[in-house]
Image (cartoon, each protein chain N blue to C red):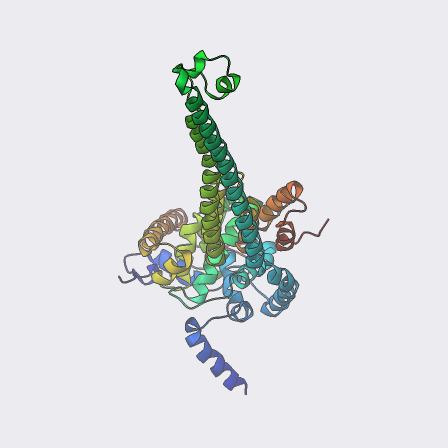
Length: 197
Length: 245
């Protein structure tokens, strides 16, 4: 029974880009993605719940997802980007984010040899926090979520060339910070669980 | 056009960078989202919003009413302007006719009307021929032109504003972003326009649709302070969730 339900869900997932989806159905399928996208866009944990609700309420007011070049996830991501920008403007987070990255660069980080997964995720998040929100959204969708540029362009309402240029700049920025971190931490011993090894 | 190769698969990117991106694909740090709880909350919010949403759907009906008022008022303005012009025209014609009669009656004396003070009526109607004054017929024409031009302009404005508001209504349903800028442009073009209240109502609804709730609320409060009983007041109150006074 459970397997059948799972199969049905998977089949439905496969063809969902071709059908209209209500806000509730979208929520069941993509709420986790939206929440994780909002976290990556730099919203604080206490803001996520309200922001996710806002994204799906906007989706509902817009009549739900309608099939088009944008996939449901990228369509929701475009709404989430607007919601996050508004929330961040309201709460003036950007300065705080910058401070966190500078602290991170001074005190913590993996060595060239050892990678702690949690720390690595934290580092990715801090690098993302440094970016302009529009470039950041494109980088998240393309590099981390594996979405196609065409779908991203359709969802954000921009030309595909703009997606490529934002992606190019975001990748440059990401690689530049990576290079700085790599230089700084080269040969350093990793600090884990509050103790130096 | 093919998408570029992803950095995590790009051999030219540093190992450090590729590893970071691969790890970054899993859920962000400290992340856990309770979908069941969120869904319950969303359902509640949708239930609450059903009434305002259905009322905001009434916006086209409201617009039709406003449109009808506008049409009637437009006709009234044109009719009034036309009547005024017609009255001016009739006066001018009558004046011309009496002038002609007077001139005809004074013709046998072969003297200009100005030189005949015994006919005060003629002095009243036919002014002395000076370069600064015009004959009554011309004055009538000028009066006609003056009285008819403002209603025509108003009619043109109203007509273009009606077209604009119709476009705004249809764009608001599909592209609230564009509708907002159109509403702003409309407010600039028609600062005292007939549809200014409806334009503001649409702009506020679009702000709500886009999730700019606080801005929508601020604008709604400003609007309601100015027009607490305006035709758009109720729909604005409902779209931002303000209670009636």
